[in-house]
Length: 246
Image (cartoon, rainbow, N blue to C red; front, top):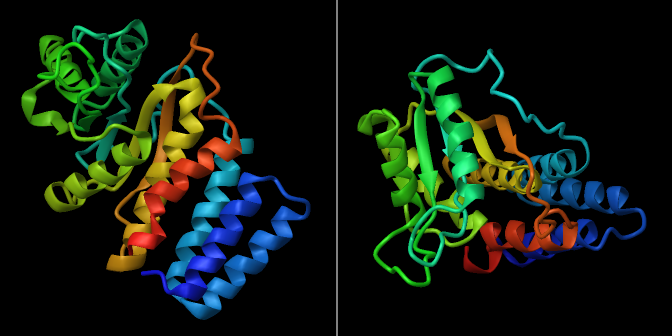
């Protein structure tokens, strides 16, 4: 996907936002324009990625309550629960449980929606379990039908959550067109940006954007800041794009 010119332009715009350089908006706009002239589909995708990243990072209003009422009422909606580090024995932390409780309420609010659980094996003392598997079991115990649950159990990072979920949904659930993210408040901007990025880059290659990220619910009470700094965010955005491998 990326030749030398495309690689240079993408590198430049991500660096400008990452480092919050002076006149960054002008630099990014110029890079996007040049990329559109050089490779129109890729330029459109990266224009959308950079626009959404800035929106999510600076203007996205966090929703701490419930999903809005205007999302699709059929199975074109997928509620995505982003995983969290398991306890050493493979149990759920309070933060993971809190995310699951918000997702359960969302699944009851939208009973025809799919429910995707994400995350691989992160229990240092129990290699047999995964974040997604533990969450899926909990949802089944709460009465969620097995047919609604989508398992993404390979990922170890947020960009892998997006990349691997993208592959599952586009190959097995092409009817899904709307995504709602459930995660902790500090994690919402990055999670929403990465799922948007994954969809836009897929659209660049395949001629259709598979979904839009239309909503989220944020869990509050956990004060991590790891994902809120643009310099940290850029590492995940760059890893998902991975232009050196395309």
